[in-house]
Image 1 (tube, one colour):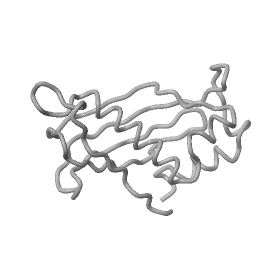
Image 2 (cartoon, one colour):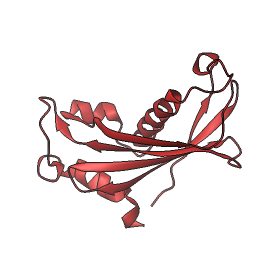
Image 3 (cartoon, helix red, strand yellow):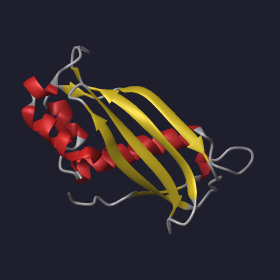
Amino acid sequence: MEKLEPYYHTVQYYETDAMAVVHHSNYIRWFEEARLDYLKQAGYPYSTMEENGFMIPVLGVSCEYRKAVHFGETVRVETEIIKFNGLKFTVVYEIYDKECQNLHARGSTEHCFLSKDFKPVSIKKQAPELYQFFWNKTLHNR
């Protein structure tokens, strides 16, 4: 399986709080940015998923904060799909400094597949190519 490039994000001033550190809510935004970048790099951008009539809303999110990030620093987000069953999947993230020496945060998001009318979709039946894409990206295939 090919190794995808990590996602890099340079911290903007508006992402910081009164303590001059990144506000905790921004880590969740970086998860989304990294997830969308991951799908694009892997050859199945989210826009293609939507064009095919599918959405992947967030069902749950968790984040463990380890070390503060400050304005102007660049973070590296490592992204992996670790679970997939045809209806739901889980993505994990690790946020490091640019040189990958310090772990700043780790977390996960859980998603499901919905149709445009917000009904759950079994993509194995309705979108076999999308099912195969996610099956090939999960860690159990390594």
